[in-house]
Length: 183
Image (tube, rainbow, N blue to C red; front, side, top):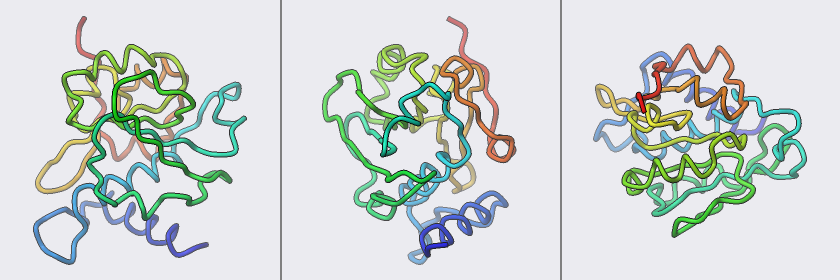
């Protein structure tokens, strides 16, 4: 097992038990370093439909729409191997329908367009992760939020079902399950 996978696995376990947080202390990782590690691990705990591009592609395409809030934190996971595939990162600066994305991250800077982005890729087999818990209620599959200085995440099972993604029980145990907002 390579060092990154071991580091991420250990980090994921510590975070799951509330040990890792993102306080201002220098030795602890920043919010987006934590989120980058979560995103990497989400891929391991999600199953895509057998007929999706996920299984046909030699890479896992992690896409970001808008501004990249990670400030280099994704360098730790870029080009790593997950599920036997190389993780690539694509950034779409302006809104356009993302092509070939397997995981789509919607940063808080795109809050005013989150609904439009989600509608454009609904039911396409893309794991959508947004930077706010409310985004999960709007239709993102996973939404990050902060609670007691810790990065947490919410899961919208209805959105996952519509995208034909299966989220494993180990991940769901760590999540806050949310219901979609009424239309």
